[in-house]
Length: 310
Image (cartoon, rainbow, N blue to C red; front, side, top):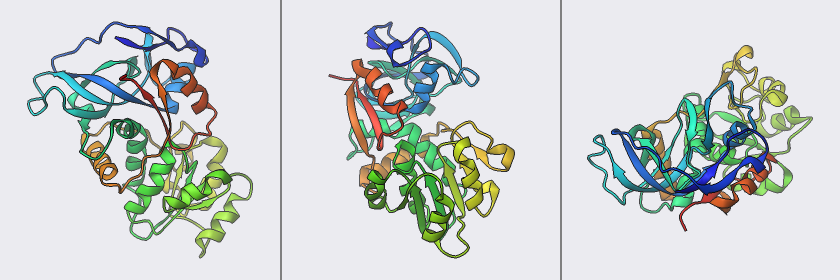
């Protein structure tokens, strides 16, 4: 099969396109022909060597976690799946070796879900990591009528989180983003505000009352945690998706957790138009290094997706 791999750590230039061994498929796995693979900051961090404390790495590494495609063959746990069935999933394990930046991937049943009618495979591939991170961070905390603050609100996780916060019952969702993305965040149901110094007073002006919010989803980390804890009513209602000192201050560190039911619900919402998945750019698989250059600059609106199938 064709795919992307890297044998060492470094910049996007370490990503090489070429012929790779087909994956070994275990009895409880499905072999999926990948049509599209979502691009995440996590893969860029692994490629750069920043995530070695969190994952065992077995080079050469095929990057990638998110995928959408069609089942080629399936093991004994897949009685209700047939070759050609459309699926999406998150190939997230406790080690990094055979990811989704390739024509084929082998995944256990618990890591995938069906793609419903009305959802194309490019959008489906953008959903798993970002959608699960937003869903699982916000769903346990938000109550009807809450006010929510999300920074990096126009990015991959952020733009989904703005919509899910409203879906879960938040009355007001304030999203920090660059001025060029204010109208985009407003179109998702959020109240946009600018990043940087003075964010506490800008949030207070938007939410009124005591100027505080009920829930904060911090998608940046240590450099924004001071303001995140300053504007929230309860410290344990701050969730950070990047490794940080949030837990030491009473908040939570979360990552996307594979969950078939959550994936199916996210896909359903996207298929009915109740959740908009913004695709900033679709890039051919062989140009994955270009996608990593773009995502590490942290100015991508929505998601980048690699097109794998010709």
